[in-house]
Structure formats: structure tokens, C-alpha cells
Length: 186
Ligand code: HEC
Image (cartoon, rainbow, N blue to C red; front, side, top):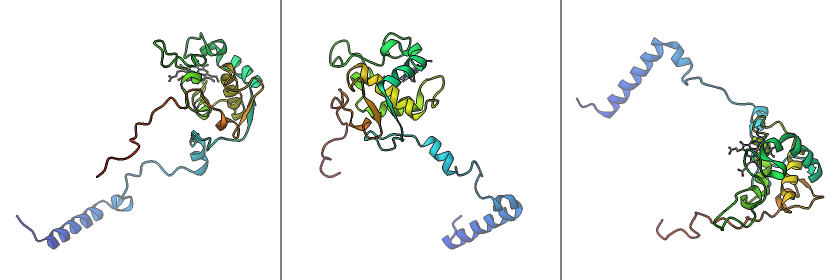
């Protein structure tokens, strides 16, 4: 059967109108009505990503000394003294080992940005109680971990201004997968 387009349209409209009358609920709620828009407080609670350049870092600060205490109380059982020898991931040492036959991947040897340490620890650690640390504690434990390999000084204090300036040893050890110039004609 062939139908002229305007008839097809009218037929479809009639069908929709009939359906609307047959089930008034459908007409009143044209969406599946799943969920609701989150409020600003709900959004800010999950909007905690820190950019490599430090955008999004919160107020607060923490010293290496304070971080050593946080580490001993809340991290050492899983990650070992000074970040080595625990049942879970090694966090320190291995700087310069990546291109050797026995690479040791740690924050110090591998991670390109110190700001990522803050983001990761705040978001995910301790793994049994993620997001339980205060921002000051996260700055402090980040400072402590970086101090173990001399990336920051033993008397360092980190905050939103100083953390993005920390130069990680493997900062330039990554290559971009993006071609520098797009091939012509694309
Ligand atoms: C109950 C054990 C446990 C505790 C306590 C804990 N972690 Fe972890 N941590 C883990 C596990 C398991 C992983 C690996 C998670 C994964 O790969 O998904 C991990 C991964 C990490 C990593 C990423 C390592 C890498 O190179 O990928 C960092 C950084 C880290 N933890 C820091 C901390 C800090 C800082 C604390 C204390 C505030 C802490 N962790 C407390 C178990 C723990």
C-alpha cells in the first residue's frame, strides 16, 4: 500500500491522539519519569576531579610531618613503612627504573602529576573508607609520600598553589597518542 506523505502524517497524528486519550497518564508524563535533576549540593559532592594543572584543588594545606602521622595511622597497614613492603601497592621508590628490565611502578617513578596523587587519594583511599580524609589530611599525606623520594623537601607544606608546581620525575616520560599534525585531507 502506498500513501501520500501528508496522509501518512495525518494518520500517525491520529494514532498518537487516540493513544493519548486511551491512557491519560501517558499524555501527562511523556518521559519514563526515571530519576530527577540533582541539586547543587549533590553535584558538588561528586564533582571532585582535580585537573593536572591543579584546577579544582580545595583550600587547606598539610605538611610532610603531619602527613607522616596520617600515613602511619591510615595507610601503612596496607602500603608498608615508607610506602614499601605492604600487602598492597608499593607507593615509593623505583625512580629511574621504568626503562630497565625490572621497572618498579610507583607514584614517584611513574605518575606525571602530583595533583593526581591528591585527586586519587582523596577519592579512593583508604580503600576501606574512601573520601573519609579531610582536605588538610590529603595535602599532608601527599606531601609525606612525595618527601620519601625527595620530590618535595622534608619540611614542605603543600596547598592549592604549591602542589601544581611540584615536578614529578616522570613528567616527560609519556608520549602523546595524538599525531602532532593531522594528516592532510581529514
Ligand atoms: C585496607 C588497605 C588499604 C589502605 C588502608 C590504604 N590503601 Fe591505598 N591501596 C589499596 C589497594 C588495594 C590499592 C590498589 C587499588 C586498585 O588498584 O584499584 C591501593 C592503591 C593506592 C594508590 C595507587 C597506587 C598506584 O600506583 O596505582 C595510592 C596512591 C594509595 N593507595 C594511597 C593510599 C593512602 C595515601 C592511604 C592512606 C590515606 C591508603 N592508600 C590506604 C589498599 C589500601
